[in-house]
Image (cartoon, rainbow over all chains, first blue to last red; front, side, top):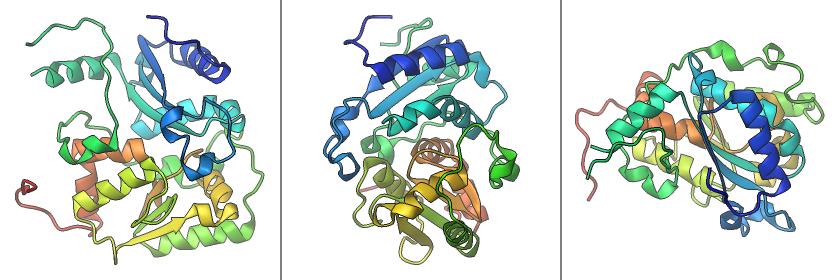
Length: 107
Length: 173
């Protein structure tokens, strides 16, 4: 996809891990860290990679509840959480759900 | 106007600002499964190493979530959330019509370091806020938002007696 600003180490490992794990048809990783830099938990934290939004579309989610999808991702990113990742906002869809969603949102 | 998108990626916003106005019903997520969660023993051992959860913290958490119908572990307080995700959850519950004074039990994990790490282990879920209904871990902000939008949350809250069924939605002034 379009090259975003340089990926930092956490962004690239999220990208690599999720690509391997989910073989996504679409994967969007948005770094929102700057919006949260002021909040109290982030005091004294200099990392620019703490908060992300991840929108991912993958066949792997078929038959799984939202909770199971999120656990799948959180489980795979254990290391990243230990090394400074603080919040993920996840949007997990199957290609089918995504197609439906695109259809309704355009009416 | 309406354009066909092939596989292009649209951005789905989760911004709390949109909360009050979103009604699109996106996902008829399959819920239930009280067993997915509650016992951490059922989870793959690798996902979260046990490091901090002491028996006393575990007991505090268990008591809290079993003795209260609706419990939220959050950053800050319902009146003054210290994080946008915690705030969003408070907004969702408020919009749903939950009696925030009497029906909600909240814990400010910023005020209790042991609880903060303990709750993450208890649920094997790495982030805050965490919402529990009737002893069951429901999810964090994203899942609450999804369930809010799909109508599933309302059903659950009605079922648990946390809100009354609403005949018709009132438009907000």
